[in-house]
Image 1: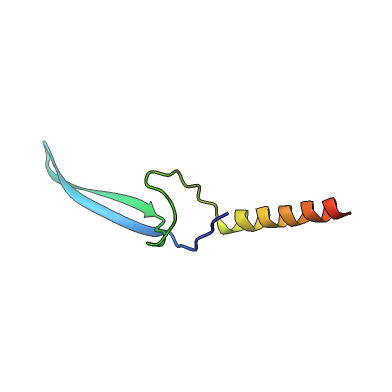
Image 2: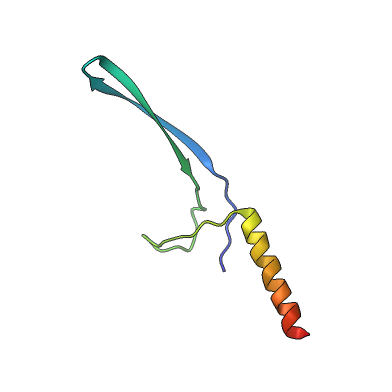
Length: 71
């Protein structure tokens, strides 16, 4: 399992739109999760993003399974 640390970045884009009433400014908020530039993912590869809490839950579940297997 490959694991990369990253933070979510909020990107706000705004542009003017012509309407019958005049110009209106459209603002769009995007949330981006940047990865390292030296990552080992292939182009157009689908990547699943897991939150820190969920990742820790999965690790604890795997540890519990290993304990159950040993006993």
